[in-house]
Length: 408
Picture 1: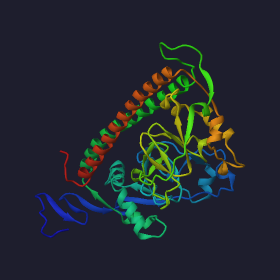
Picture 2: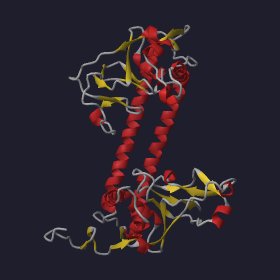
Picture 3: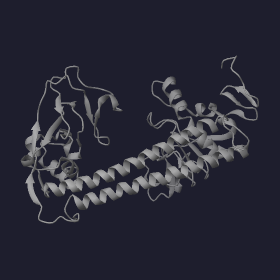
Picture 4: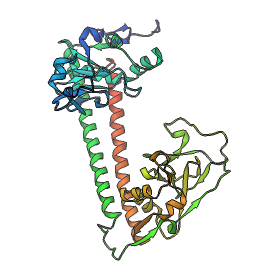
């Protein structure tokens, strides 16, 4: 800390910066009993078969209260191994299990056992377990930095957990902090549930409207069966190094590679990369049987591993982009793919052309596409609100858990 830094009245200097005078810097080992778990021998089925005791792994952690687990162990496992039955209210933190798992947390809403990748904190009477949970959630980057900088294989140890610092105000202030943050947790949970509800509603409507089981008002008449080769041409343009590199993602559609979370592994020589234009559909030639396709709103180039198709005037490409991702059609891509095993299956344009779909008039296609456009806008707005709530909570944590802002 800068020696000339001004320390406001009622505050003091500490190893964690300037903090309120009545707050203390403690190690987790000073405010909690810390233990770990184990993985009972998988070969001994008596440890698992008929098990009723929750057994927590890193993938179960949800950064909040935990009420269920993917796997259970038996009473025999608890009595014959080093597993401990931990009480409700125990705070858990992941020490390893993959870099993205490190620092993930939960607080037990049930009695449970844990595996060896987790540390369990049974808090003493000087701290509230939900306050400790909030502190750990606010310091995830610290855990990751510690893991990345200390070892070739990123992880943290039980000793790291014991030595990890925490700011401890009086319990009354801990409770006030927890109460404020819980308001945001409630709002975040409600918004998350709303997004799930909207997404499920969209999925249900797609199953009905994209198959003709349900029709929009004003539309009637038979749908017709066509082969995709009748309504799509292939775009196979290369040598367009002047165009930006794009990435076709499963959840974000077609985006600029610079905006992708994945590292750029493209070749320096992009002469064979394929041009994709707005209203084209790009799909992974070897993963079309898994539904790996997306409608593009951008112009650029993509890896030769993709096939690019462009619609004819007789169809609404937005409707078709949704239709070809439906399970029945995805299965059809699988049956038309060439290869002996899944890792070698590929659906090139001639194979794509043979897949049959049943479609309404272009006017009805467009009406359906417009409806889902509005639904997607509603979901996007709901997600933006969720992000805003999460950022608000993050900001609150930064000031409340450091004492920069006090709650009277």
